[in-house]
Length: 331
Image (cartoon, rainbow, N blue to C red):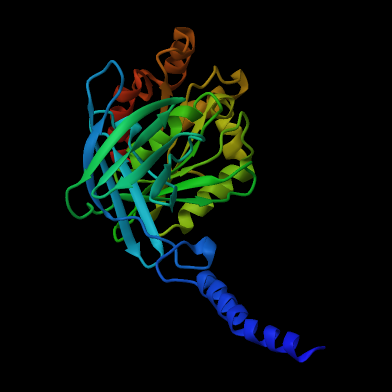
């Protein structure tokens, strides 16, 4: 190769090296940036945020958002709507990517709060029943302490993940409840779990199903008895629909693991062959039957004849909730 060409190539080498080093430097990780680029993920700002939920055609609703950082690498968030407590929730899933915070509502697929950070403000939407409600929140201080927390769990014999609502303070053992909804009662079940958890109870919300096998009931009760903060002598069950009507048969198969108390919801008329067992279950005052206002009056009348009028309640959701809370205090 001619000497002139060699010298020309040698003169280009420093430029090539400089270009290569610049490219490598641009790809190196920098602290405090996105984990997808090999860097530490951003953290959502914690605090007590207040604002308004602007529902079209209705008065504004006061909204409160608590974002907490209880331990390293773990964040929690809770949305409170004091005027509509049935819509309040503690998120079971929290993501924060690119200044966007997303909170998923437990047990309600597709319902979520999505917020974008703008300084001390959060601005976004709350998606409920396919309707998007605008929301604006301003930071007003440190987050309020958590009342309860939500985590996912698995119960053998059921189809899908369960949600465990448990008090943040586990120092005083308290009542626990395994809630088995049907597809018909499932939409309201997370609101029930939220309301009971705010009373200090532990609630295991199972995936909805039309049927219930005795082993699944036993496994759910066993999980609750192993849960921190639960009084093992005060673990009950909530059954709905056809499964509620078969309660005596389920208990007969679960002689070693029986609930301390039972709630039955929208129970059809039980088989005649089990009426004696129903009378026995109703005697210790550990059984309460609930009916939505839409349930046939004939079914409610049959339940009252079978269990006794004081053990059967039919009322709107808010009134039933108060009655259930009062009843659980006696268990």
